[in-house]
Image (tube, rainbow, N blue to C red):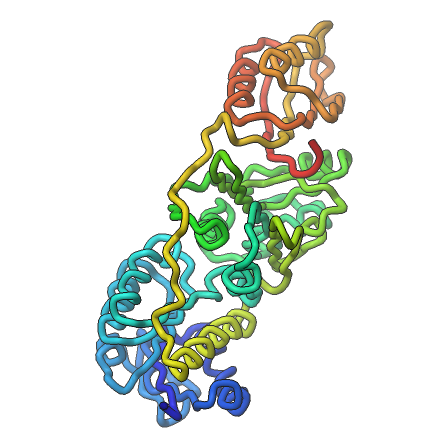
Length: 430
């Protein structure tokens, strides 16, 4: 058995420096848990001339081949991001017999199957806990802690940037554009926030969770995605009046008719545990047949929380190396790919619209919904700054996506409907 495991680190940004910090500070603890020491031999960086506070024994290189082809390196830790070029690097590393730990959600969501296939051929491990929800051990909990249960639903706040924005809008009454700029200034949001605010980052994470939780092949393109750009302060205020809070929620459901996965702004009952998850924190709610309801909560990003998840995966690889069980962790999906149709996807809906204030207007609108068997849980009317106009907020009972889309189309043809301003999913109740 090896007494020292040698690591090659790809990337030395925020998370990469956190990995080095944890390995340095916790070396004795890691050696006690695994029976072997961990040494970082080489680090891939874009600029080797930049001053860095590293041990003199660590080699800096801008050539990934120096790491992937080094026979002394046992494990590759990838925290540099990227997709196509990173895939090429990791496939070469795996072909050279190196185990991989990655925090790259984009890569796993799009090319996870290819990487796992390569690992099986080469008897290598691939771990990726840090790719979803930062320091929350949600992947390990699904794969190990809940492995004996049948998971029927997962829903959660898996993007800290959007949750920070939504929290500020709700608590301080600041509009979306202003909060986004603040988040960028504080470093919570990227200069280009598209992946976060348009829901793409959360969709990648829900893809990974759906594959694991439902043991079914799943693609990023299967996720219905809506972002938060169009959420107004009015919607937040009306949601609170109706007893809800708005969050960007990833929802994955599995029943006898198949699986549906979405990322969209959703109204949650104010008393729901996810409603109290604020700022940049993440939380994932998991429903199991046997365990019932569980929630996993914690920091979804950050230097040390994410690095902690990376090092935990590294420890898992070390244990497998010591036990001689590498390359056995991955299990092929048990069930075939089965997506629900629009007629099978059901939820409650919130709709806000501006209408002409005239006799029979409400009857016209409710008649259209009644035609498709849609009934209402709550209805609120408000006056506007126009004498001939009213604002309507309605929460339906559960309705299929197909029937709701038909009703929406018919509403758009009504002369009494001036605009349909917002449509959100509603969780809770019938």
